[in-house]
Structure formats: structure tokens, C-alpha cells
Length: 163
Image (tube, rainbow, N blue to C red; front, side, top):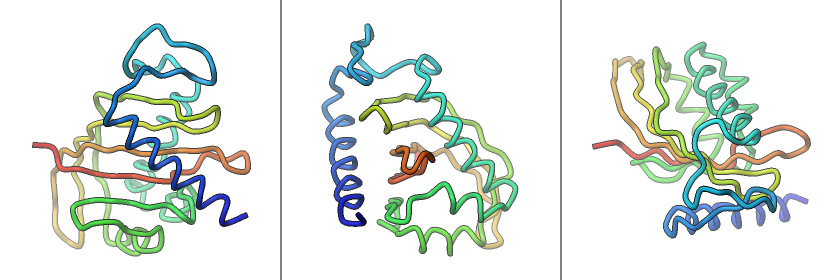
């Protein structure tokens, strides 16, 4: 079962990379979209659920609720930032000294991958504390979410500093 789930995660990450690089026309669960690019914010029920979960994840970092944050992440999840890839365990260790004070999500885009998974991208403007130091940043985020066991979980997330 773990091997199948890990293979699914690998395939989803590969698909997301291809979707972002090629920017193909998307079909959501077999229904053709009129828009030939990404969907606009809020027009897809799955998109609304995934955006809600992404906000729940960010809100948990504002309220220092690391248990909730951890429950939103797949055990096999991979996170990438300027320091390279990290596992769920590594991320949970690092966010112990991290707290968001404020954030705003902008330019949300969504690509359905399957009937129960999708990719969200957006720009976040955030302020907070990290390892005792205040910070302010603008970051581009990409995240893959899937429904597993009836629960939405994040399989992959990448953050890139905005210029």
C-alpha cells in the first residue's frame, strides 16, 4: 500500500511539473473547460476545497497549531525551497521556530490533476518570526493536494522567492 501511494505521489509530482511547464488545456474530471489556460479563482468546487485547505495550513502557522499543520501533510510529502527538498519530519522540526503574523494570497491558479487531486499556485505576501527574527517576504507557492482516505492532504509544496 505504501509503495502504491509513493508511486502515486511521484506520478502526481511529475504531472504537475509537466502541467506547469507546458501550460496545457485542462479538463476537470472529464468535463471540458471553456478556458484554455488555468481556471479562474473560485469556479471549481475542488479548487475551493483545496484553497480552503491551503489557507487552513497557513492559519495553523499563525496560531502555532503544529498538530493541525502536521495533519494536513502526507507522511510521504516533499517540500522544496531555496535550501532544497525536505521531508515532512524536517519541515515539522523547522516550523517549531516559525510563526506567521499575517499573510495574503494573490493570483491563485488551479489545475485539476484527477477527480481527487489538484495543483494550486499563488503568490503569498507574509510577515512573521523565524528562529527569533522578524521577516517579510513575497513567495510563489505551488502545492499538490489529494484526497486520501476521505481527507485532503498536501503531497508536495514548493516555495520560490518572488523578485
